[in-house]
Amino acid sequence: MGKGGRKPGKREDRNKRVGKRTPKLGYYLIVTDTKETERNYFEGLRDSLSSEIKNHLVIKVKEAKTTYKLIETTDTLVNNSSQYCIPWIVFDKDQVKDFDNLIKEAEAQGIHVGWSSPCFEIWFFAYFGQMPVFNSSQECWKKFKEYLNKNFNKEYQKNNDNIYKLLVTYGDSKIAIEAAEKRYINDFTNSGKKPSETNAVTAVFILVKEILEKIG
Image (cartoon, rainbow, N blue to C red; front, side, top):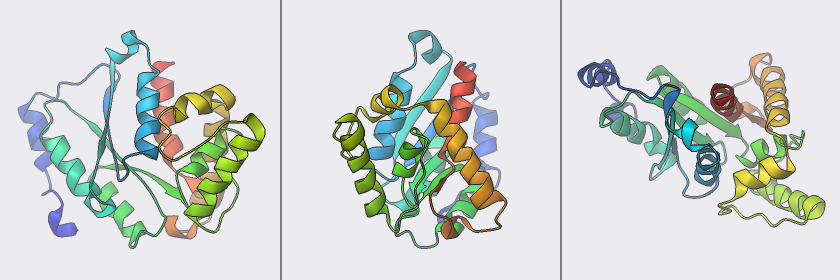
């Protein structure tokens, strides 16, 4: 994968060439390795913004063909953009080999990483002040499905296109950020563990917190 990465300075050279045009509050390019869950969540966040905010803050969500194409796809999109982008890749530990190295390589190339262990639904749990430990991604999303059904009589599938609206209606973004940040600091930052060694930890809150703070 390293051979497919951008050459040092390539992204900066393009940004200089196009004059670094950027919306007032930023242009977020979010690349995921799924067609559904993560994409639906961030598109829901984007669509929840007022027209006025959308004039100053751009959120574009794209998909890479595979997890291992995330960096390459992001580089291509950034280099082909006429605007200065804030690039993020969002993916789960799940069964990803070289999870830690993928994170390191992305960060070394100036790409922010919203990783989750074991899966993205652990971030959804945080909206309700919970971040349980699970043995697998499959168990994580199934338990979240059961939680919504039991507590709110709402069905959840990974292709829910209204997941963001559902979360902010029955949960709380502030609670989610606080819960995720606390777990991130305690179980990752202060523990000395690698991302792959954590459980019920996500860095997605960093991206969401930044966006929500910008829109007030």
